[in-house]
Image (tube, rainbow, N blue to C red; front, side):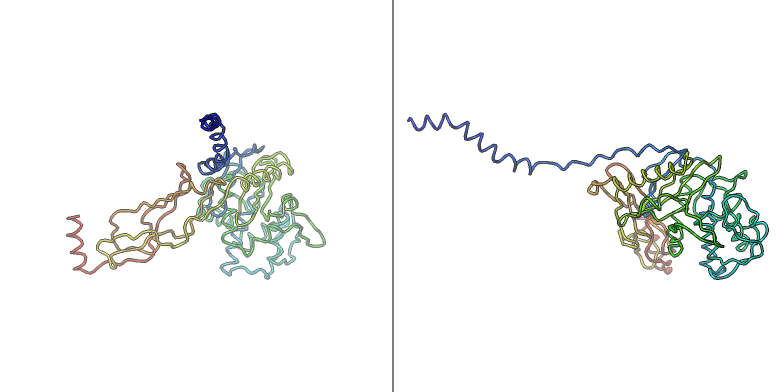
Length: 391
C-alpha cells in the first residue's frame, strides 16, 4: 500500500517527464515549414523602372513601365538590333569597310571620332556604337544598311512593331533629342530580351569595358560592369530631358534578369538603382521550368480529321518566375478548345496553359498542336458529322 501511494504521488512527475521527452518528436512531426516572406521592391529614385526575368519575360517589379519617355542613347539598342539582323541575313559583313559620310562625321554628342571619307570596318563601327555610344558610328552604320538614316529609322520602327513595343516610336538612329521620339521601360525590356535571345553571338560587345579607335581610348559608361562581375551588359543613355538612364542585365547561376532604370539624377544613381533591383530579384525570386518545349500534355479528339487525335503541348519551354521557397505552391492547368476542326497546322493554338503560384496567375502561354492533322476523307467526315450531332 505504501509503494502504491508513493507511485501515485510521483505519477504527475513521470507524466511530465514523458511529455518533455516526446515533445521534440511531436513538434517535428506536426510543424509546418515557414514561408519565406517576400518584401516589396526597393525604392527606386527614377521616373520609371522595370525588372524582368529574361527566361519567362515576366515582370518582378515595375513602376510607370508603360509611360512614354525620351530614350536618349538607349535608342542604339534598336539600331544594333537592326544591324545584327543585317549581319544574320548576310547583307552586311563584319570585316567589310564603310566610307564615312560628312553627315555621320558631323553628328554631335558622343562620338567615336571617325573621319569623313576614311573607310572603317563594320566591326569597329559596331563597337563605337555599343561601347562608347558613338552617334557618328551609329549614323554611319544606318547609312550603310539602308542608304539614309531616314530609311534606317523605318526599319527600326518596323522591328519595334514586331517585338510588341507598343509605346515606342523612333525618329532617328542615335537618340539625340528630336520630336516624336519615345519609348517605355517595358518596351526597352522587350528589346533587351530580344537582343540577348536572338543574337547571342554579338552580345559580348555589351560587356566590353573600353574601346580604342584612332589612338583614342574611351570607357564604357555602364558602371555596373566595374562593380558587379555578374553584370554583362547593356547600355547607358543621357540627355537633359531623359536624365540618366540604364538598361542592365546580369546572370547568376542559371537565372538572368533585365533591369531598366529611366530618369535617374546621376550616373552613379542609375547604377545604384539598377544594382538594388538586380539584387532584389536574385535574392527573393527564382526561375522554374514548368514544361519543356513540345512536351505532350494532353491528347485532343479531332473531328473529321486524319489522324483523329492530336497531341497538345507548349511550343517553347515554359518558365515561371516565383517567390523563393514557394515552389510547392506552383500549379499548372490546361484549358483546351472543344471540338477542333481540321486542317490543323503544327504549332496552331488549341488551348492555353496557365501557371499559378497559390491563387496568383504568373504566366499564360498557348497550348499548340504538336503535329499536323489533315482533313479526313469523305466517309470519315460523314461519320464524324453524324457523331458530332449525336454527341
